[in-house]
Amino acid sequence: MKRIVAALTALLMTLACACALGEITVTKKDMALNRSLDKSVSNVLIIMQDGELTDAMMIASINSKTGRSVMTSVECDTAVTVPEVGEVALGEVYALGDEKSRGLLTARTLNALLDLNISTYVALDIETLPALVDEIGTLNLWLNDEEAAILNTWPGDNALGGEDVLTYVRIRLDSDYAEKNRSYMVFMDLLQQGLRSKGGTNLLGLGKKLLSVMDTNMNAMAAVTMLSAFQAGDDRRELLLESSMTPEAMREALYREVYE
Image 1 (cartoon, rainbow, N blue to C red):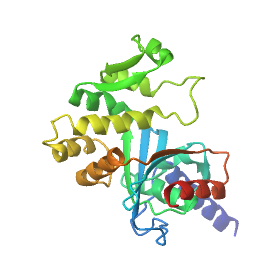
Image 2: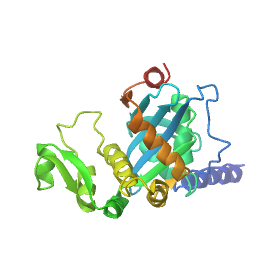
Image 3: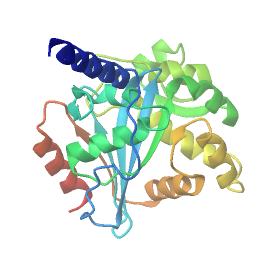
Image 4: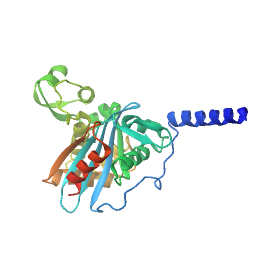
């Protein structure tokens, strides 16, 4: 009997270690989707990685009926439950999935936490930013006094090269307001400036180039559609879901901004 218990314990520990090493597999059929939500709203998960660490996580929600777009940031230290391993920080979830399941696992976790229907995701490692920015030349960003001092330039509008953009994304200041998310700002500016850098004649082709270095199940046309919706709408909002909030409070705040 003791041998059986020991064997079972060893098996469970092996499975737990495998999950911790990034072996959790998720399929499109196992996404914990809330299928009762308004079909006119599309929710896309955006994950910004810094190596194995998640730097930022956002949900881009677009309402095709009203034109409203909402970018919701979810703090990475939010406690979530992954059935295969138990309770972890949200920022740890992406690395728990196997190579093809990381984005799906993160989307499934957020669906369970927020009762959503996310099935599309984009994950970008910020270490690839220098090469992406260099593809379009420079990235135009507005810097405050502190950011400009760190980058050894002047406050206001700046055309930054790839390495400076990476430095900018990694800046953490005591004066930052809670909603400020440099990864999100750079991601959206990169898509916006990159997709129009060909004079509007080759959006799809350049979109494919940008998406080719990302972990995503979104095609280039969907990326262009998402960006166009965020650019065109007059009702653009940003929402921060803090880790101190209960799941119920998070859902209420998100539903109020996105669906009401």
